[in-house]
Image (cartoon, rainbow, N blue to C red; front, top):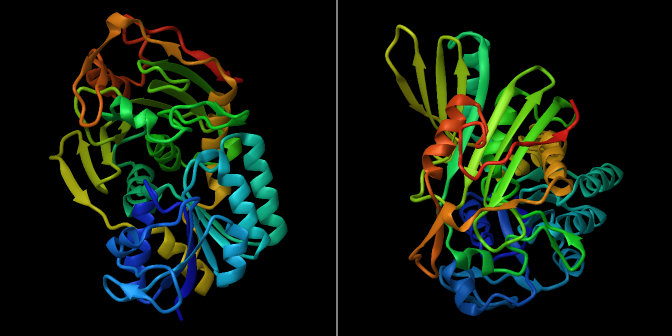
Length: 398
């Protein structure tokens, strides 16, 4: 029998979850019974997703019955008898809504980042343990079978002893991106932590994927971290940053990311060995292995959907791919960013304005190549000679 699901946050990125739930309905795994939004979805929005207008008997589009709607998640869970809540809401609401679901005995797929601070993360873990409910965190890249394949290659010595891991992400976002919702680009909102920066939200997968490949995703797996944060836009958080960590096992990981690129590029993780390297374009599940004395080998791997994995966990005990505890190292980085130095505003001569789809966009000069160089060399922006670079702040103890 299909499991009843409530979706909290069905607009913006939530549309992706709405489409995915609809896809899984066709396979008989789940059924959408409720939508939690401050403003109900319109009949047109529901029909576009293949659902009818709200109500027990009306239907439209593909004939699917319309889900119940409410702005009160607890009441909606009670009313619908949901087994799973998919939570795709502002970062600062994650903890409260996930614990509301747990209080009703409902399991959750919780969008990343897990929470907005480490204290909130600890509160979430305690609440989930108390209620005994499952939670999956929405780092979709960690559902890629490529991650385990890369780990096996490294363990087998395919590229020699590990020298380090780099990651790069260069995306284009215009000024309207930071005005789309009140919490966008904010560190706090109305006294609550948000921490919506490039490392913690839009390109957070680069961080989490590098940590998982190294086998260093638990809270105790980090030894030290250095951080350079910058902002070209008039926001509180960072839009261009470089993070370098040393894990407890001694691996150096450098992640360089920006939302101020000249052009969009596929983000990737680069695993360096003494006799070769592995490049993983994690949104595409694509892996390139380059080894000394051998030709390059490229493969594309399947991916397990995180909601499907949660359903399998509830049905037959399959292991969760991204339980909250396996985001512990990532959450220590979120906390280091939250409590660390404010992002440095870039000087006007470091960036220029260009037309965007909905608003102008700011491009940091040379940042596309700079992110690539950081992933290649494991150096930070300032070490690579960026005119605007400042020495990295040590945000975790040695």
